Length: 314
Image (cartoon, rainbow, N blue to C red; front, side, top):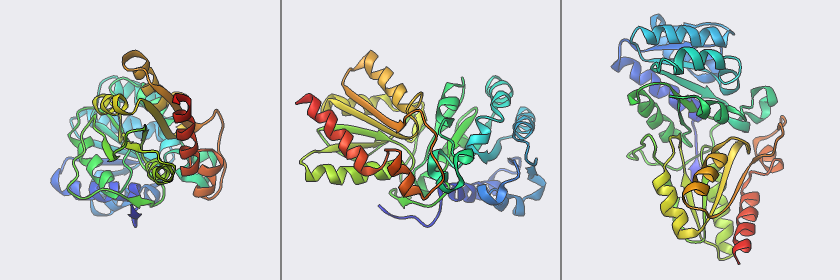
C-alpha cells in the first residue's frame, strides 16, 4: 500500500470528464453538491450536458431517468445516504424497473464521511441497493479502481451504483489491472482464513494480515469490489482451502455483504464464519481512524476476530 493523493470520488469524476469527450450524448445530473462529488469538473467543460437540479434528490433521479429513457447514458451524483433514502422510490420504480442506463456516483460511503456525522454516513446503502432488482453494485478501493469501475459501469447495461469515499486513503492497484462485473481481487494469498472486504476496509484487512502473520496465521485477503453480483467462484476456491471466512465491511452488519455471503455458504459450502460491521448502531462524528476503531472495524479488531474463528476450529 502507498498513501493516496486522490479520493475515489475525485478519481471517478476525473474519468467521467475524460469520457465526456468520447461520448457526446453522455450527460451528468447533480444534486447541488458538485464541488464535493467533483462532478463540477464535467460541468465546467460541458455545461450544456451538466444539470444541477438543486437539493432535490428524488427529482434529480427522476430527471436522470427521463434522459436515460431517451437513450442516453447518464451519471446521477449525490451522497450515498441521500441517493438510497431520499430518492429510493424514484430509483426503484423509474430506473431499476425499466432497467435504464443510469449510473450512480455515490460519495461518502459508510463512515468514511466520519467528520460529517451520522446524517452523511451511508451505512445502510449496500443493503438498499443490492436489494433492488437490476441494480449492480461496485465499490472501488483506490484511485485506479475508481477509474476502472467508471469504465466498467459505462459498459454494463442497466443501473449501476458505485460507492465512493470522502477522503484519499491508500493505493494498491496498478494501472493495468482489469476489473470485471462479478469479479474480485486476491490481494494476499493465505491458507488459514479467508478475509473478504471492499472499499476502505480492504486496507484494514491488509494491515490485520500483517498482525496475524506475527501469530503464525496466514490470511487470504479478497477485495470483493463487485458486491452485486459477487465472485462466488473465487470465494469457493478460497474457503475450500482455508475452511474459515470472515467478512468485514464499513456498513451495518445486517443485510450487507456479510449476510449475502453467509447465506451463500450455508447453501453451498458451509464453513466457520463471522462478519463484522456496525452492530445495529449509528456511528458519530469524529476522525476516521478513531471512528472505525470505536465501532470495531479497524485492523486490530479484524485480527482479533480472525484468531477467535481459528481458535474455534482448534
